[in-house]
Image (tube, rainbow over all chains, first blue to last red; front, top):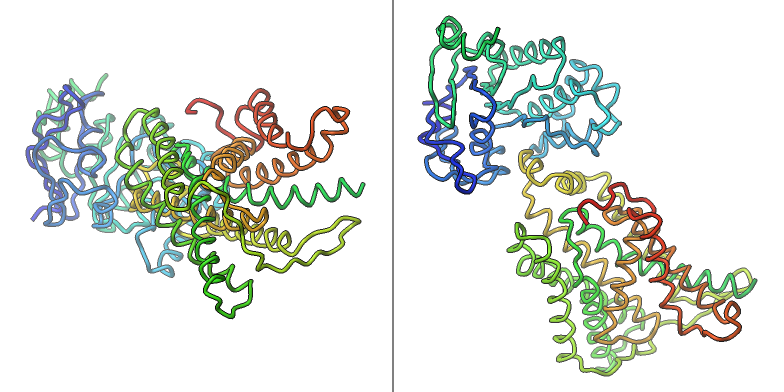
Length: 236
Length: 309
């Protein structure tokens, strides 16, 4: 059974149909990406999955149970974590407090402390600045913080919304290295990206979204070799 | 000099009560960006409930020390106000969470009027006096005098303010409150139930208001169904003075407002050659509010300016 199963999901803002009946799935241990142009409805779809927007129709199942109309705080407690668009860190909270928020629903304090320390070792800059307001971090550091915070909830599935956006190429590389590590540890990944080539290169499968619909799907390898995909999404 | 010290003491005592009430305004504003104008009335209800219990106990002739009776009154007022704060949020504000900003503001004024009238129906229009059960001791301090009641008010306020600060800065709940204040949606993604956090914020603010209401009625020896209006307005001014949404600001603003008001009342006669008397003391609170808003719209410790006022 799929870990995440989205069926015929539609989301509207007033009269505007942003997502028009999307179906997709992510299996346990899989890395799946969703690529598409700006305004295709990718972020809206993610928000609907995690309960930040109410779906107009369709259903979302996670780990075998329906989360279609559940509020975010209940959904994330089932093992689904999201790194939102624009990072979404708590800028006025310190780095350490941001990480603690990631572990908010957990009660095993000792393990949380251990994992937080491991996080500081992995991302040294976060360790150095643990007592500073997160708003003072650079964009790349904030993205690392957002990912680290999501991991501290010990998710089974990690959703990421445009993690490369606005970052320098070196930082983007580092982020994707991190994502590969995370996947290697058995966390499933659902990645929304505008940088289609990079996304497909680091995933097992991909979906293509345009104007609120899924217009293509396949293994990452076939999509990368598809001339139509190359022309439409890889740019020059 | 004696007058100065005396007015300073009186001002700090009064100011610490303003600070407790101001915290309730600022906590709610910090999370919902809503001015809970009914908060002053919650303070009044706290005083009324406590006085009812105290009067009943005194009237029944039970053999208890006055301090214990007053404490029992306080212990009745706190849960009553907590329940009231919870109910107000649930019935009056939550349904309007996504409504235009003006709607909850007008509702807040409506709730305030409803509570005043409810109190008038229950407790009547007359002033209710605080039975003389508390110790009346006076102590000399730097050429001025400070009463037992004043000492208790000061200590209680400081302890409560410290406790709240620790709760907000150091605990899981406090962290969730600050995260929710910054973005309820984002806090939801961390597993925080924003509705619970908001309810708790109202409940905590109302508990502080209950204590403030009991203390102010013990201090003046009186309670009245309309007492919450001016007290609330001044505490709100104190919160704005300190920078609304900022806890330290509310404490500083409350103390400053109390001191300014008290010193103003003490010296206004001298300043105006006897033309204005100390009964003009209330003017000072609002004079200060206007000055601050002109020169520092975000308040003394406030960070965010205007955009969402």
